[in-house]
Length: 220
Image (cartoon, rainbow, N blue to C red; front, side, top):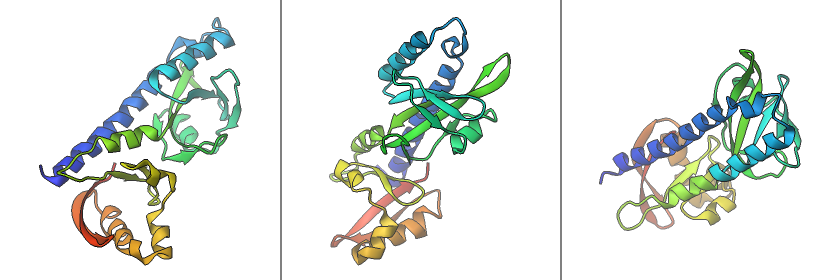
């Protein structure tokens, strides 16, 4: 099977997964459980904790119109989201998927999905779901091409956020930074800057670890 075609299909699969989660969060934002004054705090928390467990989200949260967030958990931690990109987008009426970021409370790598929520037809805040990024590496491990294959996902800064081998993710490896420290990675870094950052998709070769590597890429 053609590598470019397979890479495109895999990229589309990942993108569809993200879009599906975005739609799911938008649907949960419109639930009466969030805004109905007859629903008690405990009922609201129990509902969204149950949904988070069922849907494999870390947790759900909501903010007020000024961006002060409250986690829909028993602890009910508060986080100021007013300066976050997801708040700025969703308070204007847009659903939003964040880049891979660090959780402000735990330092974990996460993706945040947000959507506005309404009362009496007016936006009064945003609703969000936090997803640990492990599911991306799970998708990477499903990738197969010929006898040997590796799939990795980079963020826009060239840090590997998902990989067929979890230990690579745990290293928090940034290809561009690593190339400055270790010349072995220079060819990989050049491939990233010359090909991946400049094109939507493609196939190319580079020399790494004593061998020529064939790589397909697709920007999500």
